[in-house]
Image (cartoon, rainbow, N blue to C red; front, side, top):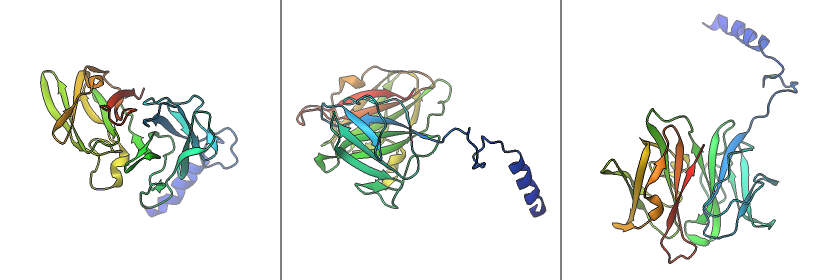
Length: 256
């Protein structure tokens, strides 16, 4: 097969137009972007704005336990920051795609061009007074017929690992046996791969979730009677309360 490789390469290159990325002189090619939905999972009532490097990405402050639409952003090695209210000082910064190991300030997984992601702003695991940013990859391909895609993320500070049960059709099953803080159910619990943020296919329709920690059920009314539409993707954000002593809550985020 080796003699045919140069011919194939010539044919491929000759077929390129000025809109192709191989043509460095092209002026009408669309720019590549990653797409990120930004979520405010902090237990602070003030809205926040998100930035990549020194460029503000959000135009409307993201309220507590709310998500922005997917917005075009740079990809690869990207510094993401957020500011609070009308402030201009970064409350937290993290460099995604700049190191081989996960740290409080960086990590190996950066935004991917022409792909969808969610970035959460939240309290650090061991210090509620300090903030961090966590990136998840969002596989938004349609679920199988009659199914919806569901992800459960744990950002309720001060609550240890939780078990999540799903109740539907008069039947209750364990959906996720163990979900740790700042991670998603169904991800790898032994390493930093939690930032992949997988979705799980569930039957569309009305579902309820039960969350328990240390064998004790946490009463969360917002997780009862969730409506999931077939073919769509959702994230359940398990979040803390404004008052650390209050019961945590949950919000349902739709990705379409």
